[in-house]
Length: 75
Image: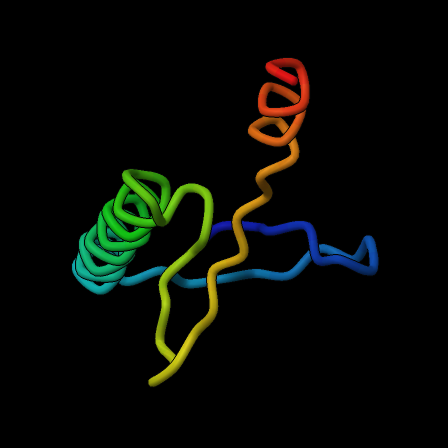
């Protein structure tokens, strides 16, 4: 049993089962690794700019302003 300071400032006596704590830490670590892998996946390739496309249909708008400027300079 150990004393633990609660969010309201009071002190509570808490009993911690070490085997349950270690199992919780192991599961928590696995979830953190899963989130890290997901973040890495979301931040690579085209998903870095557009995210994951989940719709059946989508439109991609490309600006050609720079191309028009170069075209006008030729004439």
